[in-house]
Length: 529
Image (cartoon, rainbow, N blue to C red; front, side, top):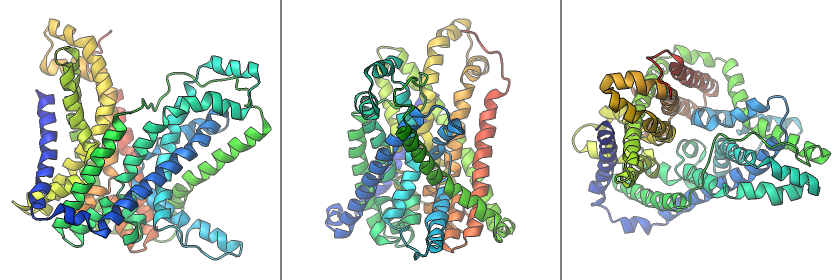
């Protein structure tokens, strides 16, 4: 019953948002909006930036994954690989601030150009800046997927390659590329969908009307123009495109893993070649500079100047309190909904006659990926606007939308362990009469506390760093740390924005660490298999 109630609640929220869009869509000719050149220019740019971001992220991940796989032993390798999960926990606005500090007109690269006698270049804002930021976030993720794919290559293939005397090109063509080829469509599909619905990056680095995506255009139509007809039309167009893209992606989805089941292969015949060593070290070094320099710039900027004065500003503490309140409540709500729906899926799968019904709650969880948060927020805003002041409910709408948006991640984490727990202990619990609170205390929590805490840590951290929904409902009294960073960037207060960014990173790390530590707390009697 809790799982059924959770699935219905999520479904009703999504349907309510769509109804809010449909009610106002009746007043506008959708095809007239599609006939406007402005609409098609936005659609073209949305596809262009997503396609280019996907191409460069996947293309650059191949040599980086090969270099990390071939160099099994170098100082900081384990830390570098763990750093590839950065896109899950680092707030978008922190990375944007670091990228501006490195690539902006007064950034490090332009300072270096002036030292060698060249003029400063304005290359950041627009398509270039969007590509840099998207590659920054997606390159580590794709590299992690490809590295695990290479690690699953059987050891006997490398022994055979050594016997046959394969060189580096032959190793790639005959051994490595066949292992990567099946992962490319799935990885490219994920990156494309993430870039297609990207909001904070495009809003911060787009630089003008010529670099606007559908997501940003919806936001501008509501917040700046208050043109609801235009916002509804663009939202419906985006939903339709996302449905098509999701069908094309998930119909041929590859199995993607963030962890490898096998140890890395050893005994490569090309691991000792001088050219290969130089190439791999160069690739790893350049990538490390590209990924670490924004964080270093943010840290340096936070220690220089009078940026710390922002800590005495009431706006900072109001935003800090809102970020903490919204993230904790959204993370808790997403975890409760995800755990309930995961149990429903597991129970339906256990019975052969109802196993096909398990796809329904799974699709409910996937709706959060098909409908971007800004579109979901637009629909709810228009629906509540008919009854009350929607902005007065902004905080609770942000919590609800963030929880629904992170639901897909919590389901990915919880479904497999809940299914395993269901298979092991469900019949035993029923035979012993363990139900209700005793079942949670003695069976569920001891066996599921680690994935539950990890799911809540991920959802809470994602909510703390979210910039999309709060940008729609944010006011002078309702603000979060990411929104404060964006406003400080708009006022060119980079030193104050850097201090806020450091505080946001510390908040996210503390939330992630403290919630994960709950999994190590003693609770009940752990049952044996």
